[in-house]
Length: 370
Image (tube, rainbow, N blue to C red; front, side):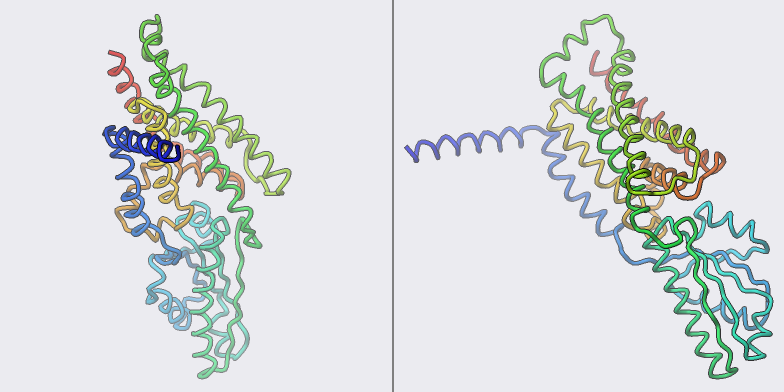
């Protein structure tokens, strides 16, 4: 009896292996997905912070201040330096995330050193990226401390370091992780809601009823788009309200601008989900397709590793990733009160991604109907 049971189980296991392996799409996804993720993990994921861009105001313009800045320029940790003359340009560089930290040297730097008086140097970090801000500030402080030790020996002066973290003064990690978590959960919800319906219709055999209905391919696709978009927007707004009220994450921006950014971001994700659904014939294939897209999209979003630290090829690839811009919008509107001008710069690539993916999904879907 046990032998017969084992035989039946073995036959079923054999049948499942054969069914999975005979399906070229499932076979391709199962083999390609872990290999693709391994390749991305190895090249794009790093906990090390390097290629740090800096904006600097040197009000002293002395030999001593240039010596200090040369220490940064010769460090392998730092990449580009933007020297500006006023605080407005300084703020714009940090606001637009062109740099990770800023340095300010006042006009009494050299005179204080020569007079053996304490002098202050200000380090300003972008607190929206808590890990990057902490590490980059640490690198900058170490360089200043090393220079401080040099001048203490020669001139007897001392440099006091002041560190300020904009948009997240205490580097509350919860502020960062919760604002990003909203976008990640919105991604999962939207992809599942859009990738499964058409595949489910095919699997259940009800897809033929859609074909013979008076609806056009565009109308069917539109009908499949609107419900998940509304549901995902509703859930995203609910999650945002929860992290504001329950977890006390500050909301510094415009509520209307946030809703518009959520709509545009989710629209680009809907296009990807519909494209996955239109090329898959079973729900299993659709779920595997979602996972295949989702993992690389998260890894290349800047959530785990700063985009600036990735190889240049991966940095260019992130321009095709809607999650990169969705995260930027969410963090920017929540923590710094991002304005319409900065938001539009992120809307443009999202709208381009949405138009490409929705057009591709529509064409594949229409071809399958025909």
